[in-house]
Length: 337
Ligand SMILES: [Zn+2]
Ligand SMILES: [Zn+2]
Image (cartoon, rainbow, N blue to C red):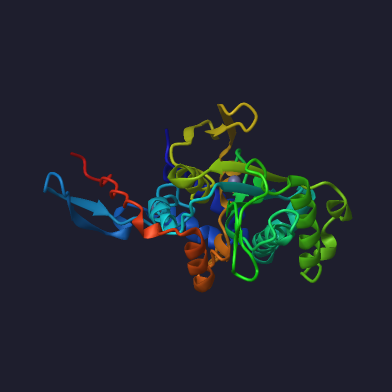
């Protein structure tokens, strides 16, 4: 097993020699962060273990979201925060993907393109939910952008975490889905998302470079029930805070080839793939987001600005989220005792 930092230490100088000025500043920043994470370069501090009362010296971490060691660090905090917003209803994970033909444009217009993916997928959900046929109410939704496929290839998509139910526009009633086994139709979601995105991208730079076929083909949306309560949250946090390359996925670095493992979506088994070091770094770096880009967003009555509507929902459901038992803090992972 190898860390990404070890791979970078060996192969980044050559990558930099080869691509020099073409390397984006955001990519350089990510590499610098990962290379210095938990090393002397970032300094450290003395940490006292609460159990054994001994002192240990701990190096600071880089906290860069592309870092496999740090990218998931917020997951536990996220679960705790979400518990305060957890409603006693079933949850759904709804995923929007885009066709191959749109990816080249997205890659070269990341800020505008990714922003549109997040906004238009949330808008699509609201559009359908507001129809009486489906829910006749406003939704709350948490969205997260992923840019990777399982083999680290470029595959932008948006996961939306959606409580199954909504607040009627007049704020007087909480509306449940018509049937417990059905929330929103995948085919209609996909078509609506395609049309919304087409309109949203029309005014964007170089939009004419997007192949016309993209807007004529069938798009894909996936609706998965994920149950309710804390089990659903744990499952969802694995999605929300997943990074392109998790720790412990690089298996080998030999003869210029990097071997890493990935879970196949068809058979759900681990497989391995070997690619040249240069290709591996290229695949990894393409998932570093533009600086400051917000990849997790809240919409509808889950948005931080919707306090009144949120309070209204709690009253309608007669629900007191603060009564949930607190999660015990995780044991410190750094103490060697
Ligand atoms: Zn780090
Ligand atoms: Zn994903």
